[in-house]
Length: 496
Image (tube, rainbow, N blue to C red):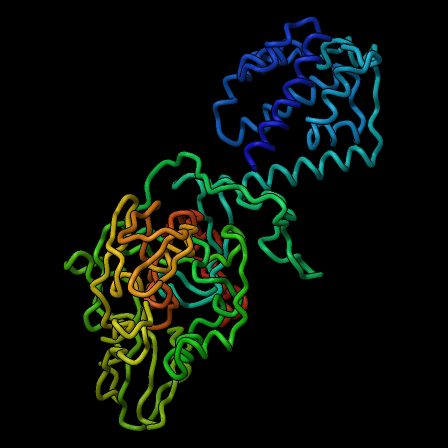
C-alpha cells in the first residue's frame, strides 16, 4: 500500500512540474527525466549548470536540488513563506494547481539582477529569521542523520577503552547512512521530547529498512553504535549492573516485571555502544571469561576490564590512592576482601601493594546468559559455542535451534513463529528450516563483568546498526577538580 501511495503522489508531482515546464517554454517531458530536469531548472533560474554534477554527492545533493527547485518556483512568483512551505511539503497538490492556474505565469530567471529589479521582494525580519532557523535545522538534521553525530558515554560498560563522560563522534558514512525509518520527528530529539516529555516522533509513516552505500563493511572488533535490540527501555541503558544483579538473583521473568519494556521503532530505540567481537557466520564462545571466535583466542583490548577479588591483610585500601587511579571498589562481607573492575595491568600493580595478599579474577557462572533456556546452561563467562546468523544461512528448526534463533526469526525478521504439536509454522505454513534475510553481529563491552551485551540478549541485527565510533572530541571527569575535570589526553583521541 505504501508503494502505491508513493507512486500516486510522485505522478501528481511530476504532472505539476510538466505543466510548469510548459509554461516556462520547455517541453513537458523534460520535467520527468532526473538530472536532465535539474539541468533545465538551472537554465531557467540562471544557476550554474555544473551544479547538476553535485547531485551525485550524498547530502549535498539535497541542498542542490531544493535550491534549484525553490528558485524555479520563484520564477513563477512563488516567494512567500507559505508558498515555499507547501511547495516543499505538498508538491503533489500545489504544483498541479499552479500548473493549471492561468494566473500563474513564468516571469523569468529568478537568480538575475534584472529579475530582482523587475519583481522586487523584500523579506520581513520574521521571514529572515524563519528562513535562517529552518535552514540551520534542516542542515543540522541531515548532518546528524546521514553524516556524523555526537554521543556521550553514560555507563562504564566499555571502560577503560571508553570512559564515562567521553563525548564521541560517530560516523554514519562508514557503514552507510541508514534511511530514517520514522522520518517524521522533532529535530535534535531521539525519542523523547525535551522538557515536556512524550514521544518526539510520529509512527504515521514508517519506511522499510534501507541503507545507503558506505565506505566499508563492519569489521571484527570495530566499536559500533547500534539500537538496543531486545525490546527497549531507558532503565536497561543506564542501570546495566542493576540488571545483571537482578538476573543473577531473581531470574528472567522477574526482571521483566521490574522494568517497563517500551516498544519503539528500530531507529528510536536506545543507542548502545559496544565492540563487535563476532561477525556473521562466526562461532562465538567463552571459556572461563576468555573469548574465543571460531575456536581461536579473540582480540583483547589493551584497556579491557574484568571483575577481581582483592584480598588484603585487613588494613583496608587507601581511598585517596584509589580515587587518583579512578578505581571504584566495593567491600565484601569479609572486610579484608574487596571487589573491583580493573585491567590486567592494574591487577598486577595492586598485587604488588604491601597489604595485598592476592588478586583473583572472578569467573561468573551464576549469571544466566542468552538464550535463557533449559537446554543451554550457559553463563556470561562460560558460554557457547554459538553460531552467529548470516544472510542466506539456513538452519533446521527443532527444539535446540528455536531457543537460539527464534527471536531473530520472529522479532528481527518480521515473521510469526508457532509450534503446533511437534511441528513449527512460520507465517502459518509448516516449516522444517529457515533461511535468514539479514546479517547479525555479536556485541560485547570491554568492561566484561559490568556490561549488558550480547551475552544477555543475543544477536544484533544489521538493520539496528547506527554507525562507527571514530574519536573522542571531549572527555569530562566528574571526579576531577577545576581544570582536571577535563581529560586533556583524551581530546581527539581515536577509538580502536
